[in-house]
Image 1 (tube, rainbow, N blue to C red):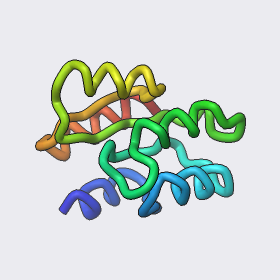
Image 2: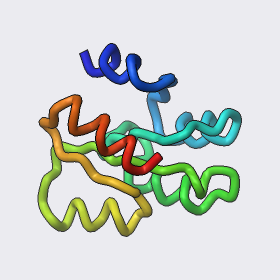
Image 3: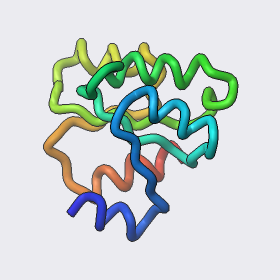
Image 4: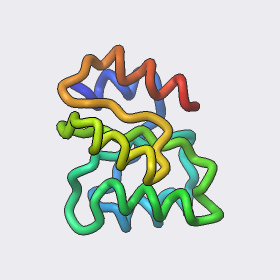
Length: 103
């Protein structure tokens, strides 16, 4: 449902790991990156740091998505460089609004 709903508003591509996300973003920079905190290999925080410290991707807005809702987790996301942090569960409308805010 999320893919279908976001696909109505945005052009989508997918990466299944932090390293794939980084290489894909360098090869074909997106307007924004929706990044889950919990991923195999590099977690979302490390991936976000890499994106923000790589010249080709540093200006791409990052929206972190997580089931981790504590203030410490959200602070870690913003310290890693994310532009917005959305806590699961969320409404599709809320996510779309967050993405539009950072783009």
